[in-house]
Image 1 (cartoon, rainbow, N blue to C red):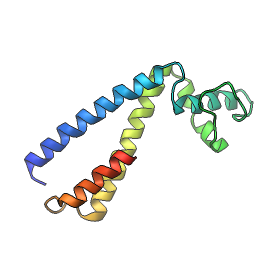
Image 2 (spheres, rainbow, N blue to C red):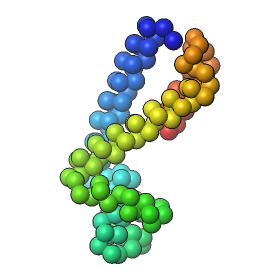
Image 3 (cartoon, rainbow, N blue to C red):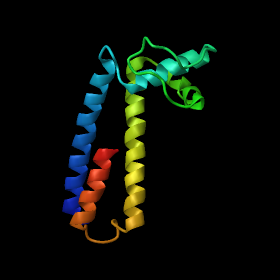
Image 4 (cartoon, helix red, strand yellow):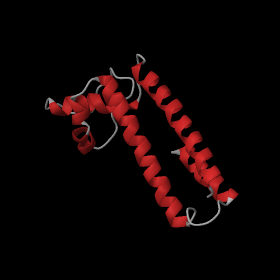
Length: 128
């Protein structure tokens, strides 16, 4: 991938990450929240010694393994906006880590970009 391609990709990827980050924070701050609120509520219940399951008064019910509620406890110790931004940042990091692994596995970084492979990786990123 030449320097011009890399620069263009970096600018587009940064713009997409920022735009989606703003959207995620806005979604997280709305009344019904988003799935992160289910995780945080379950973590708070688990921390209090209660079951994370069976709470009908939430918009997104908790449907995940119990250990995940325990893993989410640190997010309950910070303000909501910080938890949302941290969750988004970790998600973006995981996405780029996955894409980098795929790019290395396919040899995409070692040769000129193949249009089909580039589109496939971009579609995978959107799907994730």
